[in-house]
Length: 359
Image 1 (tube, one colour):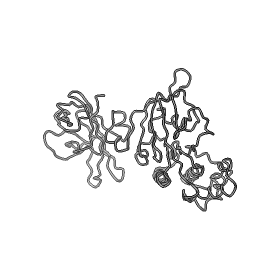
Image 2 (cartoon, rainbow, N blue to C red):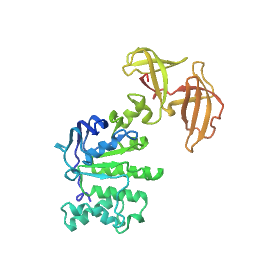
Image 3 (spheres, one colour):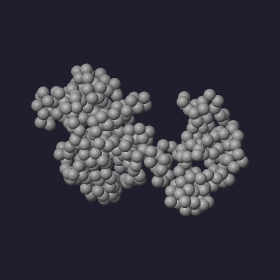
Image 4 (cartoon, helix red, strand yellow):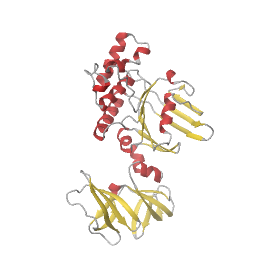
């Protein structure tokens, strides 16, 4: 199997790339990025942010209006899709309904210079990699959604692309199947050492599969980094709220000592990393899981009351009224939950809240 499908993983580099439609519609605005070989990098952002256009420019399905795109050391900026060593797995899977699984997987091989025996061996190896050995005679209509997705992955893998592209690959699957298939995609990527560029608008999906995440907003890059870096150290309110939910609370930086800042939210005092900020108005981002709700507390804690309580199986979701507005909180205590109207004391966990510039 390994002898048939070898990785030719290459880097991807954008140098000041823009894509415009007409004179005034900027789909991508002057972005520069580097995707290292054998890594899985996710382009993440809301609809219309430019992530899919960026992916399509790597594929050659869109041609950059400005800047350079390199795959490995080769400038592919103006090359059509047929002259780029990339494969793409589409959101719709794009399987041929009248062809068997084997015929779908081997389709591209038949037009890539492989003889019949070699094409068959590669197709069967691809099906084995994605766990579909024995399914080669079935039609796509005889497969589940997750199996169809794996056929699409196998079809892309057998061509040994330098870069493998995924465009919202799990959006047609239910929640449980999404988790299973994303784990399979990640395992294949790591086992074969592939360079993968992955587009999604699902934050949890991006956090689960990625070596690095590039968050996009308004046709530009808002922030890039590892999943942990983006979750724990967002650069602004947009990234904080987009990468996992965040409560954005106005605060005041009272003083900065070394790398630490003392902030106040009304009478509540808290210390956290200053992140280069100076005394004055600011915003603190607090993940719902870092909001602590107590039946009794000290006088300097924040007075709060439960406005909504929702049981979702493994945890409780609370909307909490505070003097500075509602907060969203999570709690793993499901056996003795708080009740609507219950008065509480609120504080933040010892680590997790992040200081941001005032919004």
